[in-house]
Image 1 (cartoon, rainbow, N blue to C red):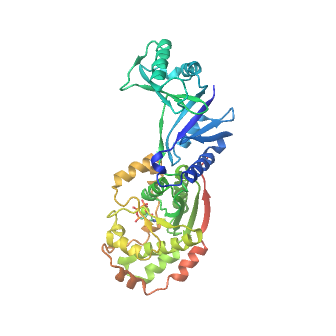
Image 2 (cartoon, rainbow, N blue to C red):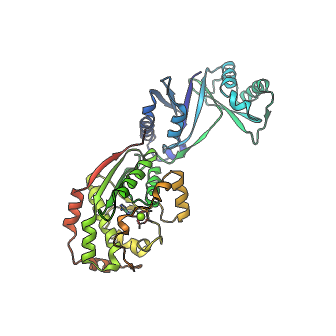
Image 3 (cartoon, rainbow, N blue to C red):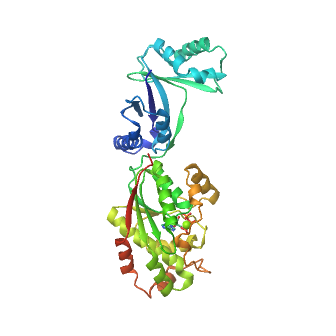
Length: 392
Ligand code: ATP
Ligand code: MG
């Protein structure tokens, strides 16, 4: 019996988009994600991608786990391939769903007949196959409203398929269909979630992280690299830029009023990120900020940060509560890493009384004593780059 994976993308997502290029990107992302599992044949028809293992040892369970994290997929299921012939469909269904049906109490059959040339209509397929299954598994009862198991038969153009599970996909748009943006990635809970959320909208992500040795340790940097790697099953390959930020922070401390330290630091982070964005052709910045979470995230503070930004800043968590953010970070498995207690450069030289409602003009005046530009360029020059790929 041949088993395949059927991958379905939401037709809604295709509205107003170029369907062909959407599919091309999705197939490319799928191929990348399962390449290490062995050879496969991938074809597509009727808003479905057919993934047929061509290697004996291909691990279908592992493939399903990986594909559940690929954006652009609405639903997926493993299915058995049958001839377009009712007898073969019955035989395959009895064999393929044997174990599931043995342990179930109720079931129903659901038929989808996209090939209208098939001689039986959907209700007839349901009725007949239901009868066959009841005959073999006589402990079963039919429950059309709330069945434990739904056996689905799909009659498509070249074959029929039988399956008993439909797994929800990650949804969203395929990564790479919405352009390239730079995520400001700290070691905290929020920014990895922000990256995940923008990747869900099809954005290809690079990440930038600022370090301040010796105030921040190697362990802190490693933690962020780990977070970066942890979001790659969703985001795909990520270029990680690590920027030395110590000198800049020290000059802020030496030359600017303390109450503006954090906000100036954030503005300079944005400036450096934009220099790298220009080189890497990123169209936007992404942060994990959320209104009111800390002093540097009041509306006034965000306005001061944005005043130095010439490209859009996406803040997908802007209206979310911490508990909602934590829920997502648990789901994407970044939470446990994020809460490891290592210092971030943001916590170095934190002012005792930060200005909660800074005005742009005041911040500009506070920065005016020192020319940061040469230091920003130097930091860009000394930036280290690493590429992270999913760990398989
Ligand atoms: P997070 O949980 O993401 O660390 P936070 O609530 O701790 O966020 P801040 O420390 O004020 O908030 O940082 C706000 C945003 O600034 C972060 O979400 C992140 O996008 C960015 N950021 C903070 N520190 C760094 C850093 N060292 N390197 C890169 N980006 C940073
Ligand atoms: Mg932080």
